[in-house]
Amino acid sequence: MADGPASVDWNVAALTASRLVRPGPAVPLAEAETTVNQLRALAGRAEGHVRELTGMGDGLPLLPAEVVDRPGWVRGAAEGLAVLTGGGFPPLGPGRLPALLSGTAGVQAGVVLAYLASRVLGQYDPFGGPDGGGRLLLVAPNVVSAQRALDVPPEDFRMWVCLHEATHRLQFTAVPWLRAHFAAEVGRLLEHLDDTAAGVVSRLPDALREMLRRDRAGGPPVALVELLQGPDQRAVLDRLIALSTLLEGHADHVMDAVGPTVVPTVATIRARFTARRRGGGLADRVLRALLGVDAKVRQYAQGAEFTRQVVDAVGMTGFNAVWHSRETLPTRAEIAEPRAWVRRVHG
Image (tube, rainbow, N blue to C red; front, side, top):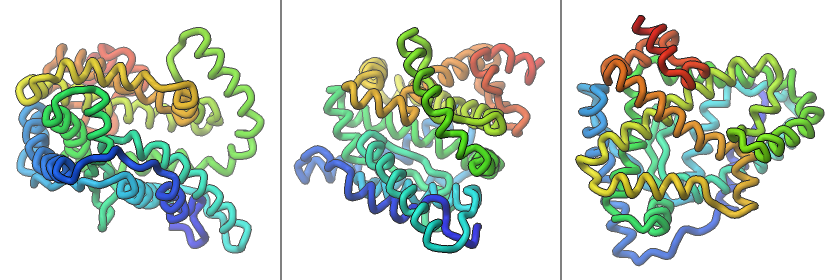
């Protein structure tokens, strides 16, 4: 951990986001209590279903989930990000100017957290919790809001959300090396921030033009941050994008594969939820593009298709070879070409 102030003051970020975040939907007390109690109960049941399908996590304890409101998610996210980035950001050194820059970055991060706080349904944070050992958060007002917007059965939707987040928790708890690997990759990405920060400003106009060109051409969405990377960061970013795509796509595949047995309306939920992911007004779509949310939506689909094709080819046990070591993780190119990963790992 650096001796000087962190590059982002996560306390400032949490405070900023808590002040900016919009209130959740109006919910009668009885419905709110039912939602909270049901989410807590379903989280453990969901992980049991995920373990049965994937064959992962045998013998691990079934841990509870934390059900939170939007400010609660903000605090949890900021705590986890502080742990994840605390040792990776370049130290700013002592003095008033670094402290001011840290606070300014905290305000900017807080604006992003406030935007996301009304959209995140749940999150497994492998770096959060009182001891930094991981926590699963379910954001009750967002689950209620999304379920109402989709007009689907409440219990089905809550279980469906829990299946996704339980899969994420199992990925990190059943694969002992994954947490440290992810943190190390983030650290490598952040090591080059000082080297590339000056170049970001000069690259910004070209990056924005490239985003507009891709949008007009109907090309796949890309995060602005990806277009701003210098050459030293691109290889690390590619590995992180491949890992994130795998994790999100695997969770999406599992939640739907488990779904029919425990979520009778899973097909309807998936169809309506996918359409909702693509929606939003102009301002919302611009923000999502700048934050990389649209690119992340594409990750879900691409990662789920990778998982489906590999499972079809070599079964779930064969798919689980992705978790054997860092070397068996798919590359970004292999995510787009699952047969290439099957040939490399399974011959």
